[in-house]
Image (cartoon, rainbow, N blue to C red):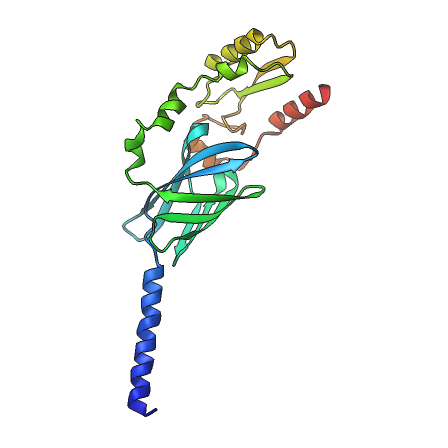
Length: 231
């Protein structure tokens, strides 16, 4: 092969490599919806990713079924087709791979244990999906219906500063439902100074979650452990 032909070959090879890099870098901005399955329960999640004017990416996470919205991502790193996300507020991380068509992310959520979690790009802004069947169910679901069937020993605890499931409005309803079930072995209690995640909190607002280093208050852990040992 002469030098000119070799030069053309090298240039062509360089263009092919550059093209591959460009096609592998996916746009991850937007809203993504996924479902996390753990211990028989399913939690619907919504991941919001934006890119600021300085080029930095920011992310927030909504846990729809837990009523926790706007949980801030402490770190996010989209690189080529890979996405790394840290959510310090809940001690969780996510590692995913973006599909070549940019419509799905396949990955793993780690929070004490590793669980598969895939996201699909939302076809419309999530804020416009408030009329969807699953969201209407979330708004209208009455937990008392299930509680009226609970006859085994039960412990129901609320954090005093829980703004998502306010204890004053819910403790009496929980107690009433368990009594209607004929349950003779239950306890309903309120833990002072704790938020929805049973962390020691100042206000209890969800935006405060990321500022609290405590995963769960020892008071809550002791309450649950001592109750179990008494049964």
